[in-house]
Image 1 (cartoon, rainbow, N blue to C red):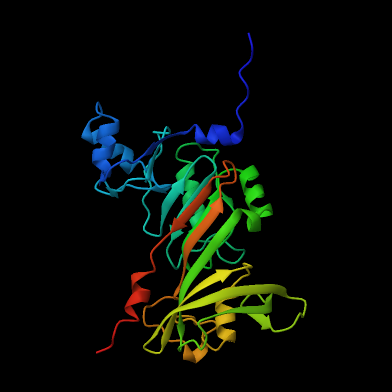
Image 2: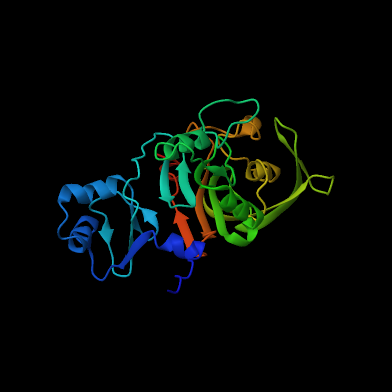
Length: 307
């Protein structure tokens, strides 16, 4: 009797889901009811609360979410997943290999030698260990404590290594939105400098002084009320890179007490920097994954007409 061919990791990953393509507009609950006519409404709501239903690769728990033709609905076969709720962060995607979260400002990504406190890393470890005591998550990249937005963790060491070793090939788009003091002179430009981590702050040099070469592309979205709304695309991902580069242009970010000095106001009580877009090739399935969050409402309010 011939042995069944062994499945590749990608095939195993894709086999965890049932995929469906939406053909007509309807709410998500009605769509699930049509897919599973024998399931009770309570059971369908349970699928949503356990975060095993995805719409276009994003976990969706809203029962009346409006579906449009062409959208992909994916239902995980892993029904035993624990519910997750935390005021400091939310999970926007999870599978057997990676977790993508949106963290709030003020939450550390991971502990440092000097800071032992609750972090995105520790919160996720507690979450995955509720299903399996030996499970843990692995750091792939970080966001500054004061920066909110999208970041990714691996769920095993092999996936972590692949993501870290091939980061620039795997990640296709990683963008931030920020509010800078003053009105930007240019609609778009690129900042290049060499950064050196001095622990408390990052030193900036316009020439190669042994620091790490750092490149930031920016685009000005709006100017109003003496402020600028900008999108930033990092070609390199150094510590505090955006904050230092904006300071070097004479337009530090609002709420930036470290690099803004006396000229950076703090009208919204936080650093105005948010990682709003993350697109990458899945490290196992090679499928393109696209995640995007809206610009924070507090950022937008700063550009409303003043009375």
